[in-house]
Image 1 (cartoon, rainbow, N blue to C red):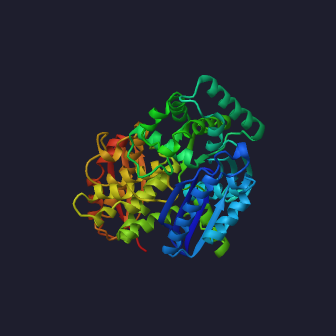
Image 2: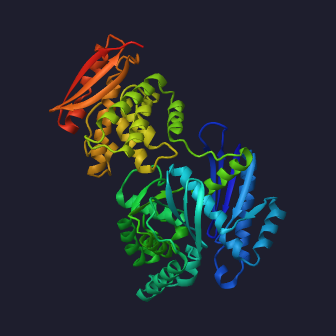
Image 3: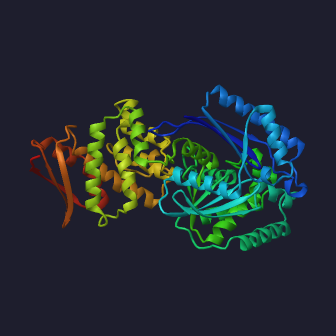
Length: 505
């Protein structure tokens, strides 16, 4: 299937064209965006303006033709708050049908919430309960659920375009204007959100969220391929809010990460997001940059095939390795040994269960740099992984995976190295610990003959003792691991000893 998904929002219209194989990861083939501002003035007049409809129609015509040129097998367009609420929304839908042949599905806020939830769960591989705050141009949805199951959807007229219409016009926003905006947002949240319990995980989506994430990433000076999966601390969001609320439009126009199309929308947007995070008591939120379009794609597949193709993290890792023609037997052997070592070292050596998938992914991908060149292949692995799309892993996690893979050989991690730029002390320590395990596991397959069947690890005094069992001779594997024990000895202040034992099948 090649699915063209069109999200017709109150501020922008977005197209994504995605290939969806029966088995394997989805691949984005094209994207297109237009700022039509369909929601502008709807709260005041109750109607879509003629100018906005003309802009939207022209954009949709381009997108439909693009999807046909790209030979999309399925095309689905979904409209949300602006078209849903406008008295002439149905007339706009009919006009689009007559002039472009595109059928627009105007969905309810509850249906919108499901698409937002599906996108978050799939794109971030979140397990268990979560809440998603989706800030659009016309409305804000707060969705609670678990997996693909929606528990509740609360839709509020707090979209960035709506609030800009109500409280815009001042440059910069006056203290009185800010107080009125905050009062309106807080009263709306208080009247609408009955469940304000802290969620296990909070996800943010929509153009406002991704723009704020891009701005925060620029402040951090953190090299990222994108902001999908980026974690934003509540404190960072509040700090950015203070800067934006006191800024002029000209000042905002010079801020890194803020597009011209959002200069007048970002102030009400950051106020809403910050207030929602505070009401829910969340210490942070994770960015889902794929938005509702991904949910549209998932529903198209569900309707066609009868099942939701939710992301399998390690399948996507292996498919990335396959694209770079990695050595599968060696990668799988290193993965198996690394996980055995990890399981033996938790929790005594400062490791957490949530760190395990990061090590597993790094072990599978540590040698993909051979695709570029043998020399410095560990550094090439870092660059290939750090710029890869790994569904189910956050942007920060992908960077950690890339850094761990980079240090499977060569020098030990140093703060000045490109691979760990922007990491705090805890992240640098995690990279060192996981890379220490990866180095040992890689050394234990030095011959790449998969001779080691099992390895156990235990601390004995000031020594970390590894007991390996396999098919003799094991001297090449043991010597290989000892040569790469330097990071383990440094990270945990131990000496590494390896004892070999033969074992039958």
